[in-house]
View 1 (tube, rainbow, N blue to C red):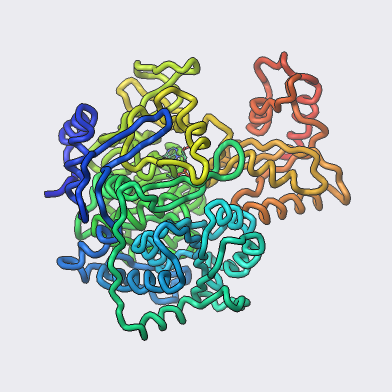
View 2 (view 1 turned 90 degrees about the horizontal axis):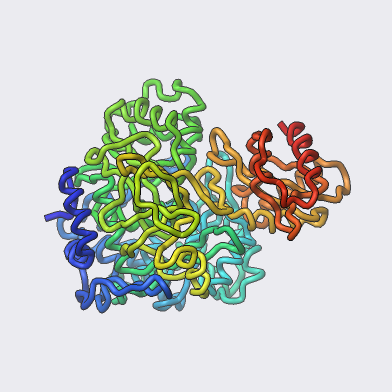
Length: 637
Ligand code: PRX
């Protein structure tokens, strides 16, 4: 018996049960997993503290659910098919049996290097199978992983390592992305100058980029594996974990301050990612599934590693980028590995669409059965292109809305089961109780309305805290509305009750599906010695979804172009290239209220080119500033 729902009526029945008796509903779903000891209580919660506990009293290890339990019947089934950046290089296949063996081996490496249950391990690797192996090996021994996306800078890594007080870092000499080589180990070396907690760095060989190995601190992955092989005992029993023990920390940007370490716990996250993977994608045992995300983001954690593996799926993991060696690469991968389910991001779809349909010529996409989208609102044009050109007009699209904090998909059609409308995430999954709130903090119960999206009731995959600062978790997510989790997203519910996410209502940008805090970018720009003050806003961008528009007050030493280049370098150095502004406009002043607050609403309108009506500007200290900025903005374009 599976927990997969295959009809819309069954979805409705499951949904109703999940609301009327959530504990019975999730208790039954959890029976489909392997427990060392069952729970005594399904759910204990309050959103005030918040204090959320799922499957209390249970003991388990998530890797036994992702690996060991598949070995008996499906040991030789491919778990991961790895496609390298360079199509000339051979791809690799790891069966469930092989993946388990590698995870156990590397778990021994971690133990040999003094990593214990509860210790934090930072993983900064390219998209190679060893990234999945390292992640699972941490979970095997109960160490808490903190994966940092390979595009982040040394300063960003250092901040994350220090916040979580990581003991060990796993990286590689370098990584390939398109025709670029990322010098990961060198970046880690720069980061570690500022990190006292790190005792050991394990370095995987990937790109043969020259690196310096620091004596007593740095060791090679391959040497450590050889040591384990000579030790002889290769099996590594899975550590017994409590249901609420933290599984991982993943840093994400908010509207204020530095990125927060979102903490996910073991049992609830496992149940939720497994259940949603199976249902949203309607995964069938013979299918090949390809999620194009990076494991450095939540989509990769939940829908490359834990969700698909707990369901015994075959996943394609891709090292490179959609446009290398050309814009037909995704379609080559689909044809080569006969991909049945493709889960990608609107920004990739829009960018490939812009390259033109010639990259689709002679590509065999006949294996595609289901399509998924994640990360940002998908515009109708991109939805239709994806459906027609990639799905042959037949494959259903599931537009999945969720967030790092959610652990797994919250609102989405079940592929081929639920109705779809382009641009709509449609209906909540069983167990998810969304609601729309008005500006006075009241729930809007009617349909055909827009409001701030909140969730009223806990679901097993939700965050439990933010690392080292529970108050911040409470303040960010549980204080805006009483007894609700506030998502930060705006949402429209149409007359039939279907949900369409309209985008963030706070100062968080979504650039190419990457979440970027405006305050973070401003802080980085302000570090530049010529900068007096800056303000960042988002504006519509045809490929990235949102672009970054920076208004900067600067004292130029040299010409404006030089200052611009220096500012871009500063942002790349402090955050990473993903946070580089698309437009920098130098201004004499910023529009502020009498109390000194920047009126971002006006700056947003100027960036969007919508300068006819700024609304109420009576609180502006000096309205003439706006005219000057508008005149300057015209010169930018
Ligand atoms: O604004 C929403 C947008 O991405 C934000 C979450 O970003 P992150 O934590 O990085 O997770 C992205 C991948 C799960 C949300 O607050 N978002 C995500 N998916 C969608 C979306 N917006 C519209 N439609 C979606 N399907």
